[in-house]
Image 1 (cartoon, each protein chain N blue to C red):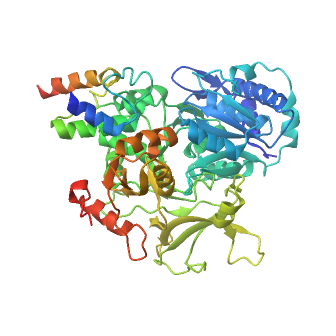
Image 2: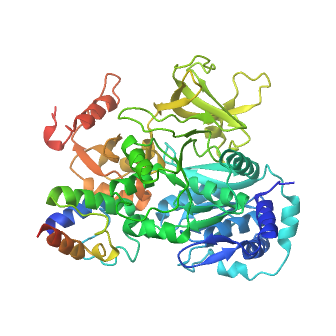
Image 3: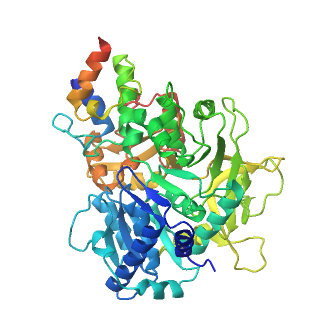
Length: 509
Length: 74
């Protein structure tokens, strides 16, 4: 029975031992070695953790084949992994560790640093024990596989806990829907501490396909990307919209040989129609799929295969739910919306749903609620906080958020978390962060005795990951308030939209 | 050069671009930094840095980028 993702690797290594499973610019690994090394790492972890299972193992990640290998190793040990970006500011890393309480910290990066309290991946690969066997025998599919941390509005990141079952569910659903085979070659763009990469690692493993990990350098200098994709035969992309946008903006494929890409599945934020037009124009024979779903689902809730070009202002639907997933809308009284075209909160449930937030019963209870229409009193659903409606033809359309969460550079960010960090800077009295949708940047309006934008920027650099930094700091002696004496976000948003918000334009009362 | 340093510092306030080297080789700038810097430079200098000018050696230091701008302006 497939009760653990380790079984996927066992199957692939039996069927295709010599086929390349993982590759990056510098190294590659076939399925047989992948399994052998993952087992060894699993045994070593198990011994280091005193035979504990179902505990957290933090993994410092880069963009190399070592990372999926280390993740599988943790799974073989019977524990779950918590990926942390190696470049994550110390302060936030500490917040994550406080929540996750890892039994062990593994620095799996190619340029790993030997530090106290940190184990290097190399130290684990040499293990020759067979402790992994015991772990695998005991593993059940409701055990946690990993925790992906995402922004939290109170300033404390939330850890989304995924089970083996939810990821196995995603694999079978994606395979059935898109028909991936061992002939496909996936090109990984998403960082390994980011939810999208879960799809890359396990959809390729499930199919016995190769995962090519694309160096971040190829996205910094996209001139080299087309020939690299061709050289490596990459044909399937599960990418963030933001990555497709960067490449379209610099017209990356103009005048180049078109790579053999056949599937482009994108997600993370709404796809701008101009970006879609560039990609469809470049890859006319490729299948384009819009995917929708938060981190709280393994894989995605719904998909829409793009069949035509879209005009300005036209919304690309998020489509229909995947099989084994129920996607529906609730109104403000938490009643099911049955009518087409009526806007409500997008909610889902299914085998792919996460267990909840790690060590956070309160926030889990807020978002994972009992199904209002179930008479069991116990079936749970997840409220996404996204607003949408269902068209008469059954396709869902995303409209916006009901709170101040945003999607920026493919990351999900609670503006409240940024504000909490800004408010903590010496001298700042209060702040309000808004998203400038048109220019894709966060703008911070702050109130202080004196201008201190530079100080805020430097402090935030030590507290938050880069994608959460505001691009601009606008100083106010006094921020405008609304009638309930809260910061007038509506007014500031309006000013931002009109481009009329600079310090010079202020009316200091 | 001051103008360029200002543009770069706005994108990455945590870096001192007057002294920083190996911006690419040490993975200091990521793809979003580069795209932000390039679009701002294109606008302010009235030039067009295209995908073929996007090479690591043009971005390792502020001085290297400045040289590229001068070349494209000429």
